[in-house]
Length: 416
Ligand SMILES: [Fe+2]
Image (tube, rainbow, N blue to C red; front, top):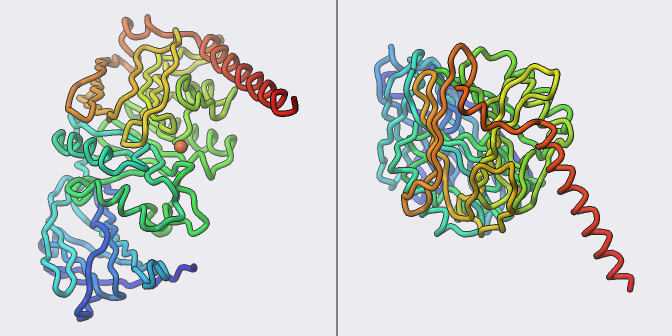
């Protein structure tokens, strides 16, 4: 397997067409899916089964539509034939405008989809975070159907989109298939999980626009969101890059997503970056860290800054309820809420106010949180629920020791 890229550039026209080649058996085999969408830019990914068979057309006037370029990535020999990943990078768009686009191929009815750029000023909006969509497409689809009803501005996926990242067909059956009706008009900001890794780098080829990184931030209204790939990024480097980006932002709300949690008691009981991660995200000024990996829902009490250190009160959430089989919960006095069911997190930001609703696959709200900020500080009754950094770290230390003892005992039993 190897990868080839072709790059083409086009100037703006009233209706823009890229490469159009008459191939009688052409089909769009994946997408279209919106990737990173900003105020003036959008990236559309789609796949075809013939080289040059796909084209993108964007409706609008010359004044509305700027330039765009595409790259074509050839995935060789999938079930005996090549497929072609297209990334159409639309630039020079106007902020806060709706566009209609369609992907065309011969003999395929060209369906129109909406694309909306991010407005320069946006006070009220809502978005979804969910993860671990792998393995059970029917369960994933049930979650997606509930997400579609909420009409989010964008969706963040916290990783493990598929069971085995090296099996190319799973990207369709477990992810792109179940998100039909969502990803065409709603940007999907994905973060890589351990199951997504592959030597062919399919995650990167499908989700990361050419020239961009797995680690990236984006701005929407009063929110700054940073997605970190904590599978392929060294822990110290990851915490450093995250802190630099978060600190540089003057946004009211600062969110971070990475796959393996830094605070998690049920399921895998992970502690990525221990003992540095919890103090690091607080010092950086993060409000929410939303992760996956454990197929459960956990919302922890906000973790206070380390004694003698300035920082934010950070709410850690494990949200791995996107479709994969449920994991076991574990009781802990640092948990505000837990559940072992399919779910997604719906955040609404209204200036200084934030509402979180966690919704299951039947549309039932299983957790709710309302907080606000005044002059950069969280409301005092929420801060009153905080646990100390020392208590959170002690919980992780306890989990680490229990795991160590368990491993020791199982080794002993094996040698008996
Ligand atoms: Fe995972």
